[in-house]
Image (cartoon, rainbow, N blue to C red; front, side, top):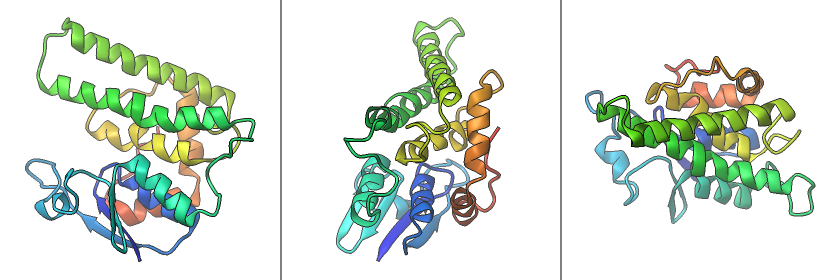
Amino acid sequence: MLTVHHLGKSQSERIVWLCEELEIPYELKRYARDVATMLAPADYKALHSIGTAPVITDGDVVLAESGAVVEYIVEKYGEGRLKLSASHLDFAQFLYWFHFANGTLQANMGRLMILNRLKLADDNQILLGTKARVDRALDLLDVRTREAEYLAGYEFTLADIMIVFSLTTMRLFQPVDLAPYPNIRAYLKRIGERPAYRRAMIKGDPDLTPMLS
């Protein structure tokens, strides 16, 4: 049985959402963050040597890293759904935005979160440079969500599942004002209307109102 080990308010929400979109059988085990540190509890860290979310178990398989987990589930259980083949006209866009999610947007938001916690001076060049990278990523994403209904084009794909965490739940840890990005906000509204997304958030984080605006 595929088991999704979901740490509250974490990137593992992607995996719960994916399973709901695919409508495959899975077991959901929820773990709460330590109230003092907001980090994963010891029993979650013990699941995998990297000690971070997400983690799945599937028989003898124990797998971490959200991109790897998403690809594993789709390849094993997806029956060709939620990804584009190399012959598809939007294949390159699909690949780009799938990797943009963690390679660019989430990575730079994570760096900005850490730098802000260091209480650096406002004119610190590393801080300013990281802020600029986040702004450029959001500018690019706003253009893309103006051009197309979903990131790969007009089909909902894994690229969308990968990016939404950074635009929503991640803002609990690193606030980002989406007011200057009307197309991103319209995109999140479309995401919020998906029944599988709503089911996933209720199951995984019932105490959290998704930050879809």
